[in-house]
Image (cartoon, rainbow, N blue to C red; front, side):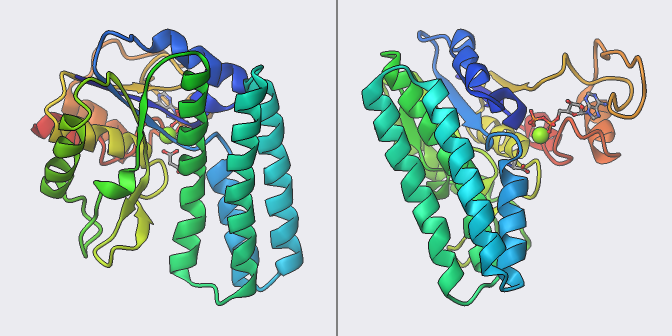
Length: 267
Ligand code: ADP
Ligand code: ASP
Ligand code: MG
């Protein structure tokens, strides 16, 4: 069993999502953890800002622009008309839901529900995409097994004891898709593992299941010796120990969620 995590950059446009199929081996058991399409979580957060400020006009405008972005994404992703329609309906359900948040009290709880939509959308679209390519897969909701405690620390025993039975009841399935980033908190509400948290989801799942490998796929060829967005001519570091990778992540190398190394190292 391996865990593959694809970040927002790997889903940034429909062609990139299509290309992921090349990386999936149908004869090997794998859990595919997806982030939201690049830019989506930021947009959703922007919508929540407008809602906090009771600026319904701008909130609705941003919701509408993001809905259009996803309509275009879906139209390009699928050639099959049936899947196109199924996916457009799915997108509309999510965006109609987002619009309902403009008519009531807005709190942190609503904010977390809103920013969870990105991963819920990307995983559902990828599931449809694989289905349209006649590749069998199952879509699991991370909200059924990923949980944080009152200190916002992930509960790995809960994860293991809830995910294992789900996998055992789907023993013949090789391709399992789930959301990164999102989880439930100790009140049972929708919550998340903080920005960039899909890496952490993948490594927690890998650790809980004692996976053979956790692969974090992104838009760069490995961890570089410096942040390529700031420094010119950086180079990939060919070999890094867990401690070195964790140190780089802790000191701000955006490539990895700072806590994501530990579960892989510990288990
Ligand atoms: P994803 O959407 O796949 O999670 P991120 O944007 O979170 O991708 O992380 C990948 C990006 O991290 C790279 O494109 C790169 O710009 C940036 N980055 C920052 N520091 C480093 C580093 N030391 N090595 C490699 N990439 C880095
Ligand atoms: N979508 C979330 C974020 O933008 C999680 C992630 O990308 O890892 O922070
Ligand atoms: Mg990331």
